[in-house]
Length: 87
Image (cartoon, rainbow, N blue to C red):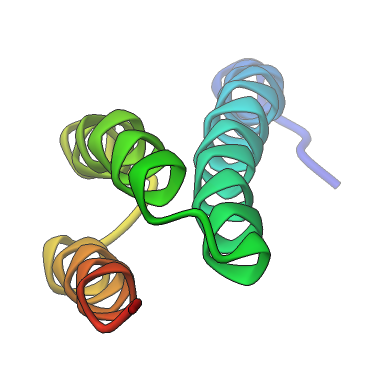
């Protein structure tokens, strides 16, 4: 357990930052899920719209330090490949 004033403050800061990051990660997952649901339903136009909305959100998670750049790029790439492969 933290026993100095600065260590206690860091614990508080980390807790607050963790909450923010959880919310951001959840937001990204929601957008990704919407794309996957559109792909599963077979609606290509809906999938393209969902991907268009999800892409900036995924890349925003990189600038906020929630996701690694390569991970986000891989997610976007795989989702767009799946949308493109639709009939």
